[in-house]
Amino acid sequence: MIINQWYVAEEVTNITDKPRRVKLLGFDFVLFRDEAGTINCLSDVCIHRGASLGAGQVLNGCVECPYHGWQFNGGGNVVKIPSLPAETKIPSRARVDSYPVQEKYGWIWVFLGDLPEAERPPLPDFPEYDDAANYRCIRGEFLWKADYARVVENGLDFAHAPFVHPSFGDRSNAVIHDFELEQDEHSARAKVTYIPPLPKGIWSLVRKERTPVQARPSYHLSGATMRLDVWLTQTWQMVIFDVNTPVDENTTITRWIMARSFFRQPFFDGDSRKRTMKIFEQDAVIVEEICPETVPTDLRDELAVKSDSLMNAFRFKRRELIERGWQIDVEKLKAEYEGRRAVVIPSPGRREDGGKNYVLKTAPLRPGKSVPPLAVAAE
Ligand code: FES
Ligand SMILES: [Fe+2]
Image (cartoon, rainbow, N blue to C red; front, top):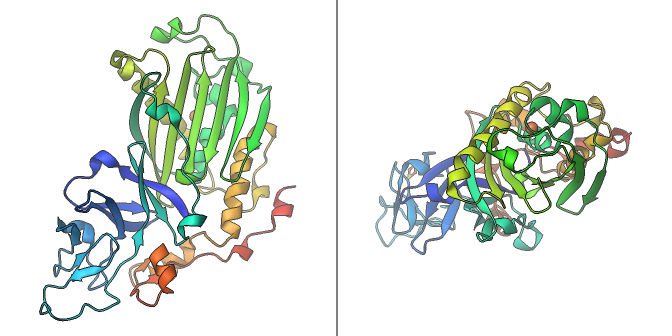
């Protein structure tokens, strides 16, 4: 699991007038809406006696710890300690880490790391989401007992479709002919042509011949986003846009939005939802049993071929982040800290402050240089 990235923490509609506790990258966070209506994300561990802020309440735009009533504002600063007389100064270390938040596509995106704003990557574009005149969107989520990087790779892997999704791919036409890869700093996409089987049910109205179909799988590092565009005809387009949040090392929540440019009436939503969920269910049978559970650090530990190029692009890019020293050292965390000492993911405010005014230490990270050299792994 990697810090200094945007992750989707929750659906906006799940934020009520109560604080909401979420687990991301193995750590607990609390989300709450302040008086201005802005959603905030704080480390969930109270620095007084370790209670969960998420179990408290929202009061005066702050989250109130359920144990002794300390009130934390959106910046993570304590503004009230009820056991102290009003004139007493609040200690400067009375604060928790507060993380940048954005609301987009109906999701709450949280930046888990301490990079200043100018160095944070952008969020992925999804123009179809705001184009209600031409696209109908439905949304849902899927929970995996699997590492998020395995889940993303599965979404980028076109060659498995004929074997795992018989309604989508045809095993007698499994060759992937064109495979053009385009990359930029935060994302990559491939153009693929394939011949699907003839669809059944209402979808047989869309395609009547076994003609090649264009598809474009892509990823974006922010949100560990996977996007798949499929053009069933020249104008009938389907987009599956999903964000993959590591809850912990071996649990991933995929939140998905499916946009379609055809059958835009709500009547067809049920069928679209069923088909989308079925794809995830078929994938989970395989992905939850992959050995090893996490993507190997040494890329020579698995054999890749040309049709794996997009997955490899994601692996290499992810590896660059690991080489920057942004991977959480889960082994060290378990061996030295778990159950004994609370640690947190560093926030931008902590970096500005030099960490002087924060009580908890930060999570152990793997030194970037501990990763085997890229040149060797790329053979
Ligand atoms: S533990 Fe939070 S106020 Fe005491
Ligand atoms: Fe799949």
